[in-house]
Length: 254
Image (tube, rainbow, N blue to C red; front, side, top):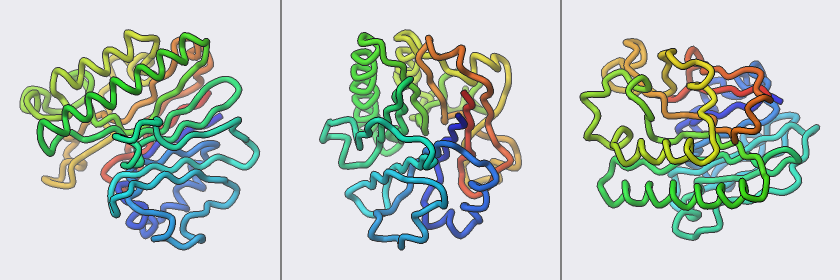
């Protein structure tokens, strides 16, 4: 199974940048999109549909903001799915979709960005905390979990180009990084970093200062996997040559 996660920074914008051609070439079995920034009513069915896939759309109540979508090839059938975490404080922003399969639950998540002030940092930390509580409960019942998406946090200094300059900014604050560590301390593996312990590769670049061309980026998009599932991993890739968004796709093959 080939799972691709991509923060598209607006589905309407990326549809104008050969998005569907890119997806056909990448050929995911499951495609997890974040920051779609549109409701189904704001798009026509032709734009939403990808041939050969069923989809689950979870838009934010606020127009032009946040949102997630999961596309699944028709040959795969989730046993169930859930939009959101079941927590109203977070669910109105359309940040999560969980699809269940026989061997694992797949969480497609757009984690909150804390850069609008400390209230949003606190909101972000509550989101991390509530998700971990849900995952711990599932782990206790023997359920494997894959979490993918835009975590909006670079975990270690290797995960961003200028760690010293950003240590007081949301996205690399100690408290945010600690929460990524808590997931790793509670039965999860950061698949890319475990397989590539010293590789410098990024998944997001600001549109300013020609950051992408200059290699000034952050790795903030992840696949976290329950430890017992790790033997299933065949490949993990960051597709940093794929354009269309300020993020690039990440790929997990199991």
